[in-house]
Length: 288
Ligand SMILES: Nc1nc(=O)c2c([nH]1)NC[C@@H]1CN(c3ccc(C(=O)N[C@@H](CCC(=O)O)C(=O)O)cc3)C=[N+]21
Image (cartoon, rainbow, N blue to C red; front, top):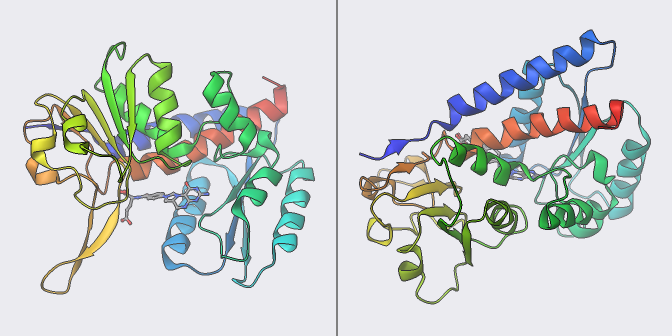
């Protein structure tokens, strides 16, 4: 049986550490970190995620400020809010929940966030810092993936890592982090030819294509480690629904370790957001 990597427990431990860091900051006479969460429109999934982020902030002592804007919000209005939050010394982190409505250019919005407050790590300055290995804020989901891997991998050097998915949010940054550890990284995506054979070589698979049960058991080398980033709600024949990942979980007994969906990468994403917010606040207060 493959080991289940318990993302919930690992996220809880990380959040405990964040709570301790926040408490220390407050004990030293500083303000608690402040996170602004911006939600434009009322996508139901986004509302759930934002609600979770806000409630987790409260648990670790981070002050959160929610900005809910109507779906019809114009780009200039959103940019004006970001400018105000950039200038607000009580705000250490700014998160704009994605996706944004079609009339708003997400790239322009992310460019406008002060990189020091960019707790999602999506600003081009932070993307550049990640690619040159020179610090900065690291995107939450890739950071969470690495922390999960760290619980089972002692030495990354020379391991074959295959990333499936080329998004700016997961695929590209997780590839950078694996490369930094000296894995041999292959970045693939849904249009990659011969994908099963490429995955068969992998010691580490990070599946982030958003394609439910794309990765089958016979794509996976015995002893490989699977990090499943996908999370899709599918309908059962009886009309009920369930969440499935990008890996066919029931076919992975021969893997060394796998992350469950739910309860794997998802909880880590939020825990890393809190930890990034603390990091941004520390930098803002001490410059280090
Ligand atoms: N600016 C921005 N930053 C993000 O980090 C961001 C975003 N926009 N837009 C949407 C995606 C999605 N995302 C998730 C966060 C938590 C879970 C999560 O907690 N999942 C749990 C629960 C799953 C469930 O029950 O629905 C789990 O996997 O166990 C999942 C997905 C963050 N995202």
